[in-house]
Length: 69
Ligand SMILES: Nc1ncnc2c1ncn2[C@@H]1O[C@H](COP(=O)(O)OP(=O)(O)OP(=O)(O)O)[C@@H](O)[C@H]1O
Ligand SMILES: [Mg+2]
Image (cartoon, rainbow, N blue to C red; front, side):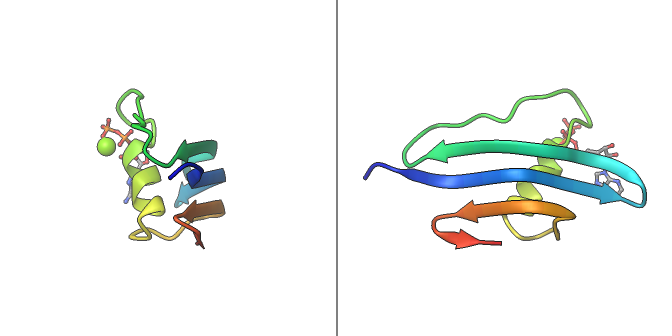
C-alpha cells in the first residue's frame, strides 16, 4: 500500500528553557525504512517519544497513520 504514513511538521520540544528539538520536519512513506541519526543529545529520543505520544509536544504536528497529535 503506497502513501505517506508519518508526517512531522515543525516539531519542537523545550525542557525548562533547554531546546531539545528545534523545528524538525520529515515524512516517512508506508513501507519505508527510516533512520534517525545524530550525535548524543541531538534530540532523537525526544523526537520518538513525541511521535509515540509518551511526551507532550511543545509545538508542531505529528501525523501517524492518519491520526494527528
Ligand atoms: N526529560 C528531560 N528533561 C530535560 N532535558 C532533557 C530531557 N530529555 C532530554 N533532555 C535534553 O534534550 C536534549 C536531547 O536529548 P535526547 O535524549 O533526545 O538526545 P538523543 O539524540 O536521543 O541522544 P543520545 O544519542 O545520547 O541518545 C539533550 O540536551 C538532553 O539533555
Ligand atoms: Mg537517545
